[in-house]
Structures are given as structure tokens and as C-alpha cells.
Amino acid sequence: MENASKALIIAGAILVSILIVGLGVIIYNNVQDVATSGTLDTQQISAHNSPFQGYFGDYVSGSNVKGLFTQIQANNNAANANGEKIGNYIYVIDSSNQPVTSSDILTGRTYNVDLPATEGYTDTDAAGEAYWKNGYIKTIVIQVNS
Image (cartoon, rainbow, N blue to C red):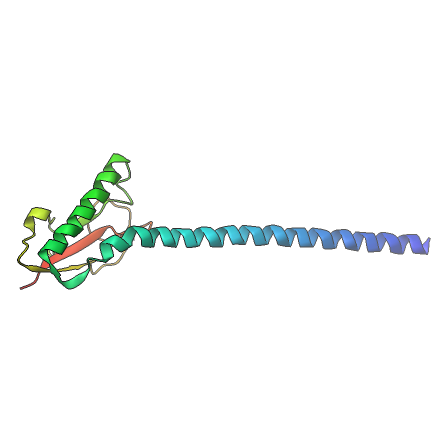
């Protein structure tokens, strides 16, 4: 009788051990999925923002700024066509928060191209903060150098 109770205790301990190891594997797999998806999101944000950030600088030529406008226009057309204006549309403003268009850019001048001073994250449909909540660039500020 004594051996039978010890055998049941050992069997119970083995069963509990298997359950603990199984739970550990499940938790590990869930953590791996979260870590992998976080990396992909960062990569997607970087891939979306990098073509625009390549134009940032203090003395950007007017022709390069017009090239930036071409990319912004393509991005905004795609955002409007897909119904994804919130989180994807890019606004272009000057230092006094007025909209800037490609026709405002002169090829013989240089410009300061950067993000707004307030590098916040928001999903309001207006220029202002630098980024959408998803991390994509929302507003670019273009100022004429004197």
C-alpha cells in the first residue's frame, strides 16, 4: 500500500511538471509573436518614412523640394484612393502653419525641410504634430532660406 501511494505521488508530480513545461512553451510562443510583430511594425514605419526623410535638411535645393512634393503627392493620392487619409496623409506647411504647394517652391532658392517642432503623435485630420499615431510622418515644414 505504501508503494502504491508513493507511485501515485510520483505520477502526480510528473503530470504537474508536464503541465508547467507546456505552459512555458505556450507563453514563449506568444512572446515570440509579439516581439516579431513589433519589429515588423518598426520596419514598416521606417520603410514608409525614409523616402521623405531623405529630403530633410537646412539647405535643400528647390528642385529637390519639388521632388519631395512629387513623392508626397503620390503618397497622398494613394491614401485618398484607399480611404486611408487618417494615418497616412502628409501635410506640408510653412513656419506660420500655412499650407505649402509645389507651385510655391522656386528652383533657384534653398529651403529648410524638417518636421514640426512639436514631435507629437495624433490622429486628428489637420496639420500640426509631426507623426500620426501609427508612427508615419504627418506634417513636414518647409521654410525658405534667406
